[in-house]
Length: 165
Image (cartoon, rainbow, N blue to C red; front, side):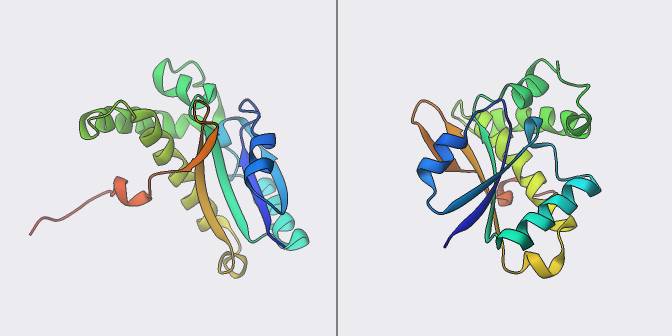
């Protein structure tokens, strides 16, 4: 049986959508703006969930209109949220770059992709290495207009450096 853990923001209310899209047993861990996998208590809880329920997949999920993340980037009105403070400046820079790089108006997806990719990297760095070998970790964005979950852009789009030959 497929068992998955979904890390979601409670402001998105995506549990019903996720249960409709993903068969099997789904577990949810909520935190505002998906800011959670940094502290020791959260990591212990996630490790315990993985062990206890034989979790094989972990998904970070945000909606394209997530008010916590988008307000942090656009109006910076959530700058007091501890988990978002370190990302606010970087996300603003990524937002500006994505508007230049992507000719479409889909800079929101690229900003959310960057943010969720950082969360995936943090979780991988802090997850028990023995558990990580057997677990697939992905990011998804919910598009309300299409009522579907889509994959985030891979981390490949946000290389920290590159060389041209």
